[in-house]
Image (cartoon, rainbow, N blue to C red; front, side, top):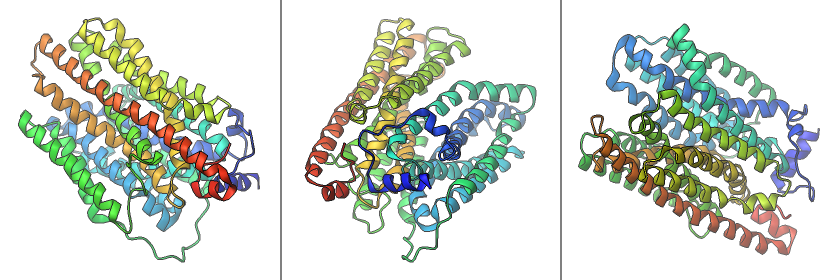
Length: 499
């Protein structure tokens, strides 16, 4: 079977010389169902985020609990990160098919609980199950990309997933708003059930069952997962603290906890992270820093830009939301363009252009606030989206390629998890920065202006760090590839295909 041959080439790191994939190949019978399955797994995560954020205010109006509305997002995020952290372990123990089906069932259970809820605590319980299930689904879907597709088609898959995210960002709030207004907020939750059922059917069709493993199952590091969960929860809670000192203390404590958990994991026999994670001397380590820092910096716009457009420049909610849609469309269009480039070497060389464009966009937002001219916001958002589109898919593929032998699942599963953690930490850092400048609901326009300026300055500084690390990632990967160019054995050991 041709798919089996391609998968074998993927796993050994071989590809036909000069062979590059084409978009239409994703529609071939060999790959079509796999493409739909992985994109649907991403869509469950993406659309659910926008559906729920649009429908929740109406649910609060029905049975109160406005003070708990932020926890619906917080708990979902925390448990999604935990699900992603344990996904590689579950895949190794139970196989991709069993793990995906079980995670989808957990997701459906959470959706059912939230859809039939009669109080906000029940909605929160549903969100916990939704987050945990979807975190596992997203991580395992990433891990399956190099297993189900040959290297030449991996860029196309990341481009297809970028289209899914852009569609969710643009159409998710519109569809959810329509269903909530003309039917019920519960419909915006319930629509996930048939989508998950279709996903389970496709998984049964495309993902092969795994034979029982003869190796001793790796234990799930529950203590480390609990510590990581506490750290992420503290990060989210810090953004809701009533005073700046408490907020700063909670954020510092959370980051210390996560650092300690990472250091402990390095020495653990059964680690969550791949070997070399976050090392500044290896391309995998520096690349993972880029995956964390780019969303961390971009969170500034996600949290404060739309609010600022409405309250500083008097935009309507729809017009303000257009800036977010513009960023998503730019991300998607650029990702499609990069995935269409026939030279893998050129795509890798373009990785640092991603953090560079992100820095340019954040510099533009800083200037827009500094000179009080909203017209700079829209080209800046285009630059931010292009930054992610030009680098994200290729960077993800590169990190899979340079992962140690036998640990690619850990790396693949870590990518969406680390992205979510970056947004969570970024929201907390931006919240602390804004609060230090006097931001609150009753702040004057001048204070809001000053707070936004400080937020974007901090975000720009963080983005420059991601630019340095992006350049270093490409340099270290090239050096590693040159060391492996002495022979096929060295290439196989390095995991980087020779071009």
